[in-house]
Length: 63
Image 1 (cartoon, one colour):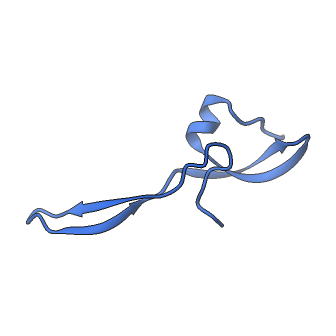
Image 2 (image 1 turned 30 degrees about the vertical axis):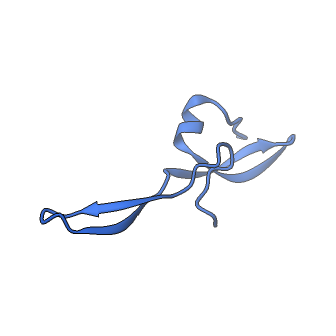
Image 3 (image 1 turned 90 degrees about the horizontal axis):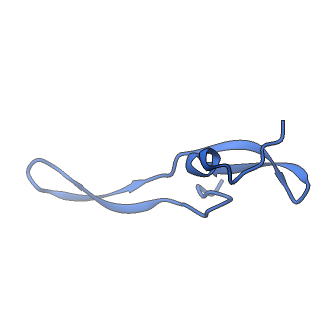
């Protein structure tokens, strides 16, 4: 599974974790993805969508 939103393409980003002693180590932030059944090209399909796209109504859910 690619950790990427089907609608907006949001995926992981990288940066530094900074400790109290100012030591920098690499880390990643992953998007908040949910696996939902949605209408894609007229038929229901299971896709991974970020919660921002779900909340804003960019996805038509199949019930």
